[in-house]
Length: 210
Image (tube, rainbow, N blue to C red; front, side):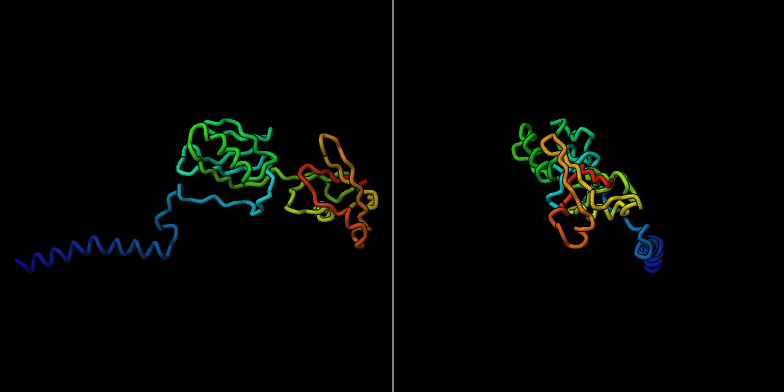
């Protein structure tokens, strides 16, 4: 009688334990069969490590309010430069760094929480652009990279056409609501002369190639 019970127990172990071990082995061989992590534990990846990055329209940011998942979300910066969040509605984002935006959101939430902890991560960079017009190889709008100079910007636009006048290039920039013109002698800068003309671009700058 005892041997029959032992045999019956061994059969049960074979039926239940072996399939479990087979599943574990298959998971190791094929990651697709492994248990998936909870989506809520996924940390958004930042699109830039530059703490001085200035947000602009079409950028996408992840706003995380510690221990407040209903207030945390990923939102785009609208064309008017603002984002929409629960409780505080519209918040100005364009023109601010991620840390400055986090401080603005935290200040707005203080009406509802004693000491809100807010972090802002840039998940998509689309707002930083400059423009190239005229006799450039590929005129149009381009993504502005951190610390990009005028010389680098021209290279991104494919150089010049045969009809361009590289010595008469200029940059247009809005300062205090007024357009300001900066001359750029491409050949002189390329030869190591007039390095002061090779300025760092800002969002919205327009390079004109006559």
